[in-house]
Image 1 (cartoon, rainbow, N blue to C red):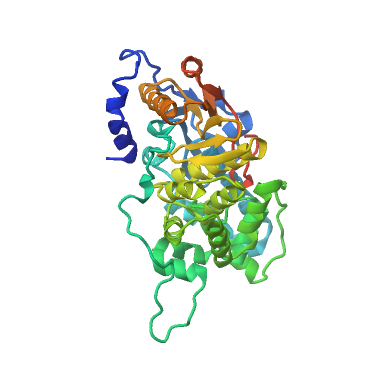
Image 2: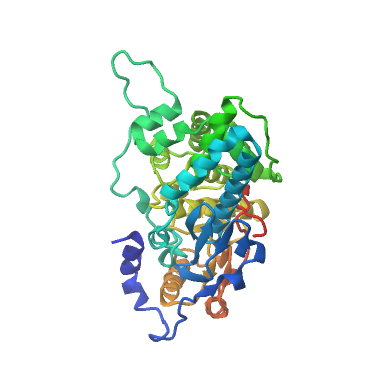
Length: 436
């Protein structure tokens, strides 16, 4: 049983007392046409095309991308932007390999990786199921009575540092220690070279990407670059500002070991425990670049209480899409806080919920589209009930990155909830594509 299922099941008794519409009086999750929801430049480019049929799983669009380098699935608008940026990076590498004799090996890397990893980022159904922002958790269980289930059943960790074996050095690097403690998830970052990071920076992509095709190409060009076999430089992408620029600078400039140390130091300063940090860095679904986005966003919430509880839930995600959901949620919180100060994060099962200084209870949800389906109606019913119990004087609001149906907006308004659509969307350069 998934956590979302358990939440909905536990809420069944409460829902019986909430007036829901009769069976069948709900919207059916729509199927979209890519040509109607995407700009032309995103729909089709010189090296890719998006399949016309786009389904909605939970609250996120499900895309299928056919490219010169394989077929990729993208769970959600943000993941689509990331994958298209990666396709563009692969094309630029391939073009460079044609222009520079020393880079002919890159063309082979692209072709070979594509054959073995064309569907490495596939299975959208399983990915969507792992997103904590699924319908059942859209608004979460809020309030002082809420329990942080992410840590349930986990053993306490007294010391983050493993005991030294006889004859071993007194200390290890953060990356090596993480590798000992968490296995392959941490070991994988050790292979990210300076050359790979430099080329990822030039291309504007995440050096810690899960895209096996791009990873193979970055490794190949990084090896050739390190050997001094060419001097060709690609034109860097347009720079961005503030927190986004800081995150990108950290990811590109620091070694994996330095980045792990940086994240750990900042998390400890927020009051995050060693056990929580270990859970975060040991989760194979949370790439180091995405982890840094989460840490930087939470770090920007100066003076906001209960950040560690949010981090615990993020550390428990069971998919890459789930990790991206929490990175986006954390960045939404940071952007909201910069404009309208927050006082505390409210523990919930998945949503980014917070109280503002001016007495609002805000739910920040990375969602592409919210139809008034029965699961959404049930989640709203539970959220409304709990908000009344625990925050009777707060004014409830929902902020989503995408759109809501007219029916959803009407139903929320009828319950006294304000909804803000197309707000606080992803701004990280590593999550952008041309024209999106």
